[in-house]
Image 1 (cartoon, rainbow, N blue to C red):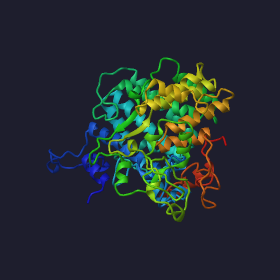
Image 2: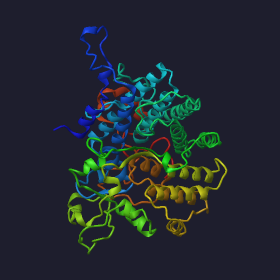
Image 3: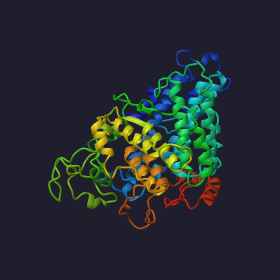
Image 4: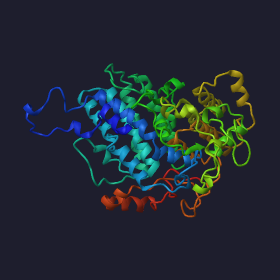
Length: 502
C-alpha cells in the first residue's frame, strides 16, 4: 500500500528529477503527453502543501517542539518526551527541508527553482513568493539546528546538488534572511499584475503575501533582540514605519488549509489513524484552567473515564511530561485528555504565522522602546486575535477573560511585560511546535518545570537545539567539524546564537 506521502508525491509531482532532462535527449524520445518539466503552478502548489506536511509532522512538531514546550505529552512510547530524540528524526528534518525525501521530495530546491523561473519570466510576484518561502524554510532550519548551510544552499537546484556545503554562522543566516525579506517586499511593492498561479496559501493575493513578508521579517528581527538589540531596533522600526503592510486580521494568517480528504489531510490526523500516544500536557491544562481560559475545550478533549487518582470523566486532565513507559502505562489512556478535535481533524490548517503573533511582537517592541505606542493594547489585541481564531468572539466573554489578574498586562518592568507576553504567546502558539519552542527559548516564559528525564539527556535543562544528522558527520565531516567548533558541542543543550538569556 502506498503511504500518504507517496500518494501526495504522485498527485503533486515534486520529484527533482522531473525537471532534469538529459542534454542531447533526442526529440523523438520525448512524449509530448508526458512532459519532463513541471509547470510553476504545479510546483508551487506542491511546495506549499509539502511545507505544511513537514512543519506539522512527527519529528519536528508532534515528537519535537510540542513536547519540549509542554503543549503535548506522551502517554506511550515516551522516549522523545524524555528528550531522547532519535537520530532518524534529525535526518528527516534536515533532508525534508533542504532537498526533500523519497516520500515527500522538493524542499528548498523547489523554491530556488521557482525563483529561477520568476527571474526568467520577469515575474516579480513569483520571485517574491519564492524568496519569502525560502526565507521561511531557512528560518526553521537555523532555529532548529543553529549554524547551517545557507550561502551554498542558495545554489541548490534540479541540476546542482552540493554534497559538502559549508556552514554559515546563525548571525550570517539571519542577516541574509532579513535582507531577502526586505527585497521580497520591494518586489511586491512594484504592484505587478503578473499572476502567481497554484498558490494554495493566499490564492495569488499579493497584498497578503506582502503582509506575510513584513510580518515574518518582524518575527526574525525580534528573534535577535537580546543578542543584537541595535539591529533589532533598526529592523523593527523599519518594518513598523507605517509604509509597510502587516497582518491586520486572522484573514491574513499564513496557513495551508488541508482539503480533509485523502491524500490531502493534516499530518496530525493522519498520525492519529494508527497511533494514540500523545495527550495534552498537564502544564498547559493547568495554566488554562487557572485562567478560566475559553480555549481549553478547543485545545483539549475531556477525559472519558476514571483514572488511578479518582474519577476524571468529563474533566480536562493533562499528562505530566517526561514519564517513563512503565509509569505512563499505569493509568488508562481514556483517563487522560486527548488533543482537541480542532487540531486532529483532517482539514485542520497547517499554520506558519498568525495575526496574534504579530500583535505580540508589536507589544514587545513597544515595551522595549524599539517603537512608540501602547504595548498593553497590542498585547490585548494579540489575545483577542488568538481567541477569535477559534471562534471565541463574544465581547463579554473576551472582556471577562482579559480582566482577570492572571491575564492582565503587568507593566511593572520590562521583565514583567516579557512574562505577560511570553505566557500568552505560549498559549496562542499551541500546536505550532517549532515557533512555540523558538519563542520559549528566547523569552524564557512561561516558567515550566523540567520534565523528569534520565540524567544526561539535556543536562537538566530544556533542549535548546537538535543535533546535526549523522550523514553530515560522516559525509560532510570537515564542514560539520568547523560548524561545531564555532557554535559549541553538537548537543541538544548547546544554545543558539540568539538564545542568550536564562
